[in-house]
Image (tube, rainbow, N blue to C red; front, top):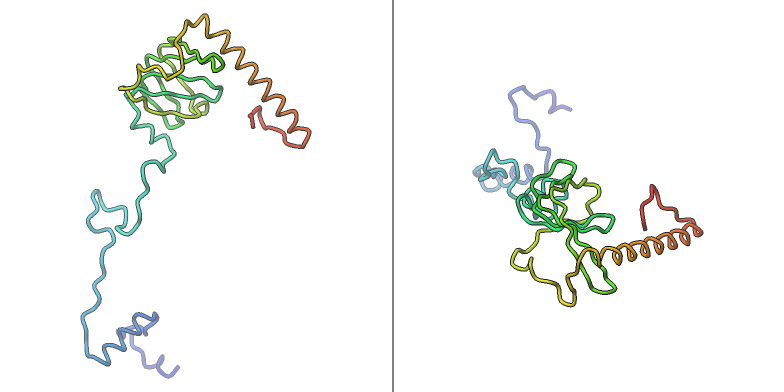
Length: 193
């Protein structure tokens, strides 16, 4: 308390942190030294330096917002929807909700039992973002290749087989839901397990 009464407004504040205390000890032991240079963590950044140098940057795959769709604009994409539909075409636009517009789109119908597939032309297709399960760019070098073991067939042949498979899958899901409901698990809002 005695020291507090002798303080003046122009006096340096007392040392509060350990590093400052060590610097003061070194100055007493070895004489005055140069003050430590503070490095600017924002040095060398473009556009105002918003990111410090020592902060690790995330890879582009880490962003899960609709901004990641920017790199797919004007590229041929394959879109897998939540109801097991597959749409291929050139992605023309997107919005903040992940809704996309696909130009020159084709719906792919598959019959897994007989390894058949067919293409159904759909034209301009607007897909709501919440219905997209997965989206990916198509390799144009391999786009025209037919997958090994699969055969292209007419829509009239594949559509009834595809529909029968879809209904069988739906019945299987309903059976699983019924069994899970007996155990106390109930899906919300018609979502599947």
